[in-house]
Amino acid sequence: METSPLAKRLATRFVAGETLDQALEAARRAGSEGMAITLDHLGESVASLEEAAEARDVYLHALSAIHDSGIEGNVSLKLTQFGLDFSYDQCRANVERLVRRAAALNGFVRVDMESSQYTQRTIDLVTDLHERYRAVGVVIQACLYRSRNDIEDLCARAIRVRLCKGAYLEPASVAFPRKSDVDRNFVELMKLLLHRGAYPAIATHDETIIRQTEAYAAERKIPREAFEFQMLYGIRRDLQRRLASAGYRLRLYVPFGKAWYPYYMRRLAERPANVFFVARNLFRQ
Image (cartoon, rainbow, N blue to C red; front, top):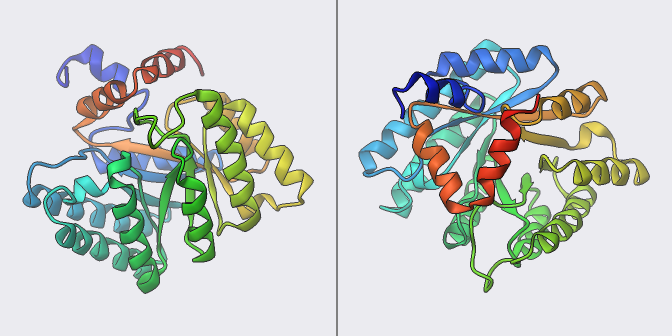
């Protein structure tokens, strides 16, 4: 699949390329339309600590390249890619090197959230590094029951939060089983973040929720520069352009790397509804 010309053509709709240079070119195009970016090097769930160190080094290079090129951007990572399944301490050391570099460059590192088995360890690691360097934030998933308490604590610590619905299939013991409940919780958490959060990121392609966010910000007179929307590279370009042209801050999540095939297969396997989400957007601008 990874060497098939047809499959590669399909992947380029949603992945910026296999190399950092290709990702930076996509970032420049986004910048020309008034959008910022966050780079995600594909390759989560590494097979060894040596692979985790290699991933760390790619991200260190990406941070420096973003800074040197003047692109408005940061990086996003997953802790399993930095070795969390093998050693919490080594994973933390890898992430700390990256966050320390980001702080020196006036940059920023976003730690993505994975399935619920990683939630507490992810929050603990981000909280610890934020106390030392500030240049790090986290993702919270609206599908989880615990997320309101997590956001209240993160807001009290002035830790930046990206709010998303959540792409993982979770048991009913920890997550809302119905989409309508996830959507309702997302809106409630969005309002909490806009009211109390430190430069929150509202990550969704749901146009109904986006309009609710716009309406709430206008009602509460929350400046457009006080928060940002985030969307995936290649998804709903029409909506991306509308938000950017309306003066909202918009950041694109730009994945790159050779591991694009397992990236998409995991997304589709974790939550079958993602198949329809990707299929719909193949035919949208």
